[in-house]
Image (cartoon, rainbow, N blue to C red; front, side):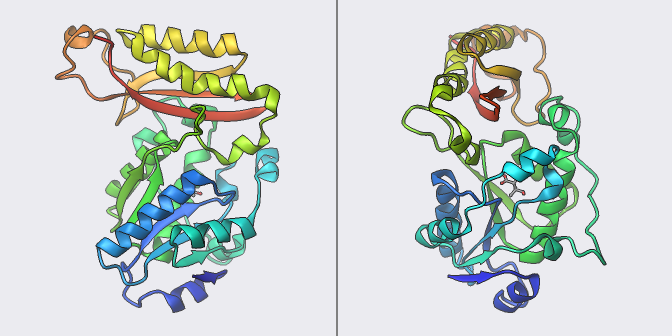
Length: 293
Ligand code: PAF
C-alpha cells in the first residue's frame, strides 16, 4: 500500500489517464463500517480490472464542520487508520494536509448545491453550510483521484443523496455506489463519534436504532414519527429530527396516499431518519420504512 500526502505524489502513482481506481473518501477515525467500504472498493477494483486498485482518502475536511469545537474534537488516528486500510485491501491512501486540498493560491469553488442539499430541512437545517463543505471537498477529491467508481456509506443517507445528485447534475464522470450501515451487535450504527460516548449514554444511543425498528410497527408516516419521538425522548436523547421521508428527495411523503395502509405499490420508497444528541454527542441513523400491514 502506498501512502501519499500530496496531490503531486498521488498524480505520480495513479494511471496518467485516470479512471483506473475505485475510491473511498473518509475523514479517518476509521472503524469496521469504513473497513466494509474499503473491502467493497477493493472488490470493485478487482472485478472491473481497475489497475490502480482502491484509493482511500483520509482528510478531516474543515469546511464541512459548522462548529469549531466539533472540528477540534474530531478524533485523529492516522496510524490505526493506515493499518485498517491495509488490512481491508486499499492500494493507495491519500492523507493530505488542508493546504494540499485547498491551495490558498487556487481555492476550489463550492459547486452549486442540488435541491436535496437545501430543501429537506434535515441535516441542511441543523448544520447549515455542512453540505456546501461536503460538495466542495468531494468534487475536489474526485478531481484529484479521478476514480471510476466511488463508495459512500448509507449511514449518512442525506449526504449520499446529495453526492449522487451533485455528481449527476455536474456530470462528473464517477459512478456513485453505496454500502449498507454496519451495526454493533447491539444495533448501534458504527460511527467515528461513538468513541466519545460514555458508558452511561449507551442506552440513549441505542434508542436511535430501537426507534427506527419500532417505526416498522406503524401504519402511517405520522404514526411512525410519533413513535420514534416517544422512544427517543423516553431514553433521554435530545431529538433534532425523527421523520419518515421520500428516500430519494428526502421531502415529506404525500399525506395519507390511498394505498399507504395496505399495498405499497405506487408509493415512493420511504426512509426513516433520526438525528439526536446523546451525552453531548450528535448521532444520526436511518433505515428503510414501509407501513406495517
Ligand atoms: O462521510 C464522510 O466521512 C465525509 O463527509 C466525506 C464524504 C469523506 C467528505 O469529507
